[in-house]
Image 1 (cartoon, each protein chain N blue to C red):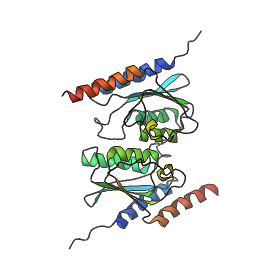
Image 2 (cartoon, chains in turn red, blue):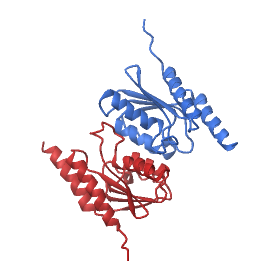
Image 3 (tube, one colour):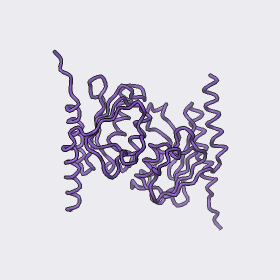
Image 4 (cartoon, chains in turn green, purple):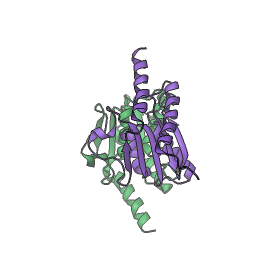
Length: 149
Length: 149
């Protein structure tokens, strides 16, 4: 019997990516992309290291997943990301036509849900709140560390 | 006497980039980024060539301009782009905090102005309609060519 890897398993992998960002003094957001039950891309925020505002975890993961699949659409893929996507990443997910997006904690300042318009593709199923506390905790720890410097 | 290069001059450069995309059978959108009167980045849409939905002209130009300047914010820069930015590129311009965005023709299907919410940074001045006809014409020519294939 083959057990299916659960949503929680994949979000824990995204959290491992977020921890890598934290350790690099980057805003700790991590992402994995899953196709057919397998992780095909993983990334963490690298905007400071790469000196590039476009280097969000999700953006890198989209590029990497498309490279892996050999096609730019991610219609059968699920993105697991620790924090709610921003406008840029939601817009990119629209173009990639993701099947599902699962995110952990809301981004009260820059998350798209605050806008009141749906920026995701109409076919993308969006779920939130998975391991919310763990995902948020890493962010809170990061900004607490920043403020106390 | 040193003449200032005009907005039109820079949009014509963006159009040259769009033509390069056209010649590669890419959706013909081009962009340049100007800082202190000089072009510091230029790019054209490469989503097909790179097999990557994030490879819009603007996104590549942001990355390239930041690399040139050695800082990820583009607060003193103007983006000239032939077609109205999409959600993804507008979101990226928010993070980059561009000073100005000048675009040629509206994108009736995927442009951000249709959404009725401002996705640009509150400090970014957005102007549209520069060489609108020329910018739109290249797009129309591209889609006409596609349909007649």
